[in-house]
Image (cartoon, rainbow, N blue to C red; front, side, top):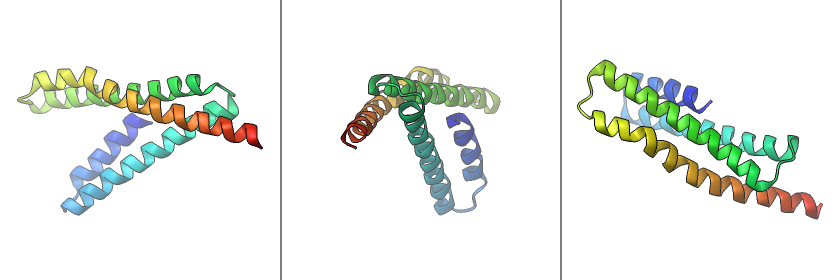
Length: 122
């Protein structure tokens, strides 16, 4: 989901005639990714009944996988257009998953723990 959203909305942003529309497409991509992340947490918690730690692990792994796939797509695109920064693109293969997975784990852990507390109180 994250890969499709990233590529599709990046393409839409590239077609935009104004900077304002580029920003709008990027915000919409962020919003849709956040919705997918929240749905994943809800699915893991309510449907599968996983613990907060397992829920956070699965959700952050999905985010990291999506970030890695986007980094691969960026590398392929860089090869196609002849990027002058191949080392940075190669670094992105490690950096993007790490920079997204750690905060995603923390947010998912807090959200799933909060959902667990709410479930017990009702």
